[in-house]
Image (cartoon, rainbow, N blue to C red; front, side, top):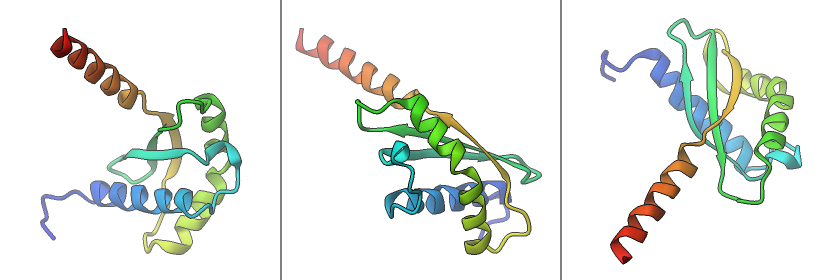
Length: 117
């Protein structure tokens, strides 16, 4: 593996994979998070904190409820990660809604309207 690939980036990739798998496999039992999808993770260079960005592709989902559900599951997620990953310290996790997906969809819609008109 290249030395140019920072450790925090490798950990970010691992966290995306593992948390996404927990959601897909229904390991997080809270129904508020059933349509959550992890879009990105940013880990600080000291590995102390990870900001986990999520979205939902179900337009009927309440993102605030989803955020509360994910925050409520943080302890479980960190515990599961500590069992699955071979890293010294699991970062503190903070969830944040990723509104970029909606913005991209809106831009695509506007471009389509322009090309149709």
